Image (cartoon, rainbow, N blue to C red; front, side, top):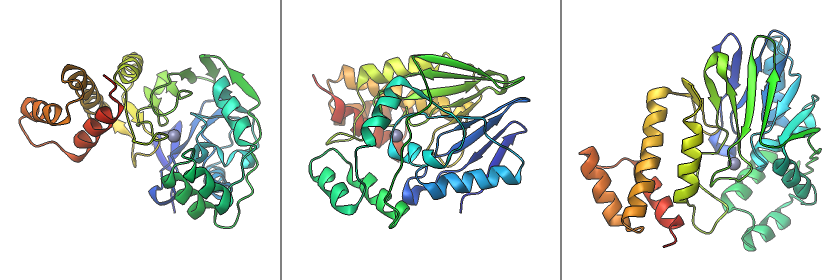
Length: 283
Ligand SMILES: [Zn+2]
């Protein structure tokens, strides 16, 4: 079972759980108000988070969604506070209200290519027989950017988009130099081949680099990254994007060039990143 972790006296998070694709959930507590980040992938995920917050006498006043994907929103109905979302996220959540999550419907959508096998499996595992999902429409929507005063602490929520999901938002806490990235840096998984595209990645990274942060949360990474590790991840993405452009998506050439630059064999993340850029390359 995931246990709440504290990174400072104002920020705690519940680590992700890969087995059923649970993302990180976080609470940012100012002197006046507390903002929760993401609703979790089920009622039990949301309840686990709320119970552990209650043990620390933390009560959320608002909740914000990083994007519309199931694992970030299925716990919404258990969250008693007003929910904020980017306009497009709200639209997607409303569209999802029409869907059924029993095996036959999930399997049908996988067959039609609109659901990912990986997500369908995680949904079945996480929900068991509790397939009734109530998705309330978020109470408040914003267009591009929204700032919340938590009392001595600010949360800046900003739309960044990217390949993973075009409604992706980040949450920046300037006083703590913390940036919550949701899934925005991951590849597009809703595609036949998981992929990154050059332009979207470059634009996204350019925007992310404008935030003065030291601690970075990616929703499915076990622990937050410190600046050096995060910068190295961004560098891999930037290099892979540049080399994909230069070589016109020639996987062998990109691999050879990157390995030569780094003077070592590529690690798993680098190999995978190159693969995703090659998948997304359209000459
Ligand atoms: Zn996602």
